[in-house]
Image (cartoon, rainbow over the protein chains, first blue to last red):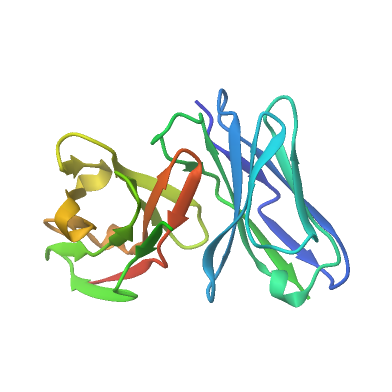
Amino acid sequence: KAGVTQTPRYLIKTRGQQVTLSCSPISGHRSVSWYQQTPGQGLQFLFEYFSETQRNKGNFPGRFSGRQFSNSRSEMNVSTLELGDSALYLCASSPDTEGYGYTFGSGTRLTVV
Amino acid sequence: AQSVTQPDIHITVSEGASLELRCNYSYGATPYLFWYVQSPGQGLQLLLKYFSGDTLVQGIKGFEAEFKRSQSSFNLRKPSVHWSDAAEYFCAVGAGSDMRFGAGTRLTVKP
């Protein structure tokens, strides 16, 4: 069974630009969550999608958005990039069975210059 | 509100020595508890999880964890550490998709 796939692995963007990150969950998993990981703030929850609907949202500005497609693949978008957006962005999928836990992708390393 | 505390930011152990990583949680009901490991530049890998039954849980890579309700703890243990265990370890608590992670404990293994 293929794992959670995130593309691209690395990105370098300029301040003010926008970026789109992609996540393909494990087949059959309908819940996809996104996390931002930085050395200073640790793992911070961005949002969770289930069946194309945003179910939970973390405390991030509106520049951070996401969506989920009918095949459960998800994208997140960050507009008007700031230097502080440099981070490892992790996607995690779950079958939405309580207590199952997450399976994480390897992440996308975003650097904003 | 649910929360997770990992009191140790960084731990160093010698190869072959035993390991215990601490995790304390706050949760309103019986929690689902998890330990994840992250190697540099990688995502998180699930080591083990607990949500009911035997309070001593076995995981992958020779790790185990013990749930102690009275102490609100879920400490991770390994009897003999290998150099390849050097990584960052995260404790998490959650139900369904509402998962909260601790700040992590970085493990260094001395030869």
